[in-house]
Image 1: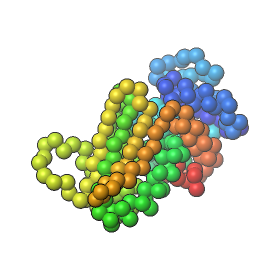
Image 2: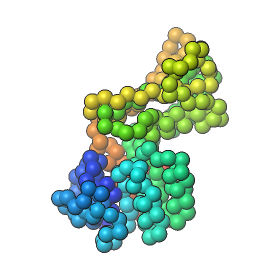
Image 3: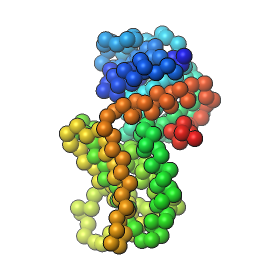
Amino acid sequence: MIRVLLHGACGRMGHVIADLANADERLTIVEGVDARGEQYADFPVRKDLSACTEKADVVIDFSNASAADHLLDYCAAKGLPVVLCTTGLSDAQISHVNEAAKKTAVLRSANMSIGINLLLKILKEAAPKLAAAGFDCEIVEMHHNNKLDAPSGTALALADAVNSSLDNTCDYVYDRTKRREKRPKNEIGISSVRAGSIVGDHDVIFAGQDEVVTFTHRAYSRNIFAKGALTAAAYLAGKPAGLYDMQDVLA
């Protein structure tokens, strides 16, 4: 049985992961960490990583970007593998992720769902063919009104999948309100919607002459992200130091 430390245990995703873990025979959550303090759970919850006492095989993190640096330092020092699900990391924090991966196994993904990660593979194959046929690419992402970062990490990952398949020749545009000109061909527009309780919708639109091809992913509950994180944790436990992603899990 794989022993899990749940970082961000009292948050919305923390509760979903804890519920699903109860039915997962591969692993068990032995301890949690949440800055809001000790709250009721089936496992002890500490205010800080330094207060943890249980032996863990892997960390699942669904906290927030402000806690990422402390977590990475903790895992690197202990050689503890970590599934890093928090989005909205700065460039400096992404560099920190790369440094930590030299000392322990770090799995970072903008989206933990199996569907999104398969879509990333599909886009890399489809985008060059559609671009060669003159199709423009636009991305629209929609999330709930409590989401702090925009665009979503998933939208950027989808844009990166398209861009990398086109030899990184595209520019990302998030706002066209201050310019008055025709759309350049080497552009990927990314639009964000924040409203209601939308879990996560992503449309990758390829618009050509007289036809449109749209790749759509709809998340109907947070369970898909929790299931992916648990699968990633089962995969990562015991792995050597290095940087991993969900493509490795699905390989």
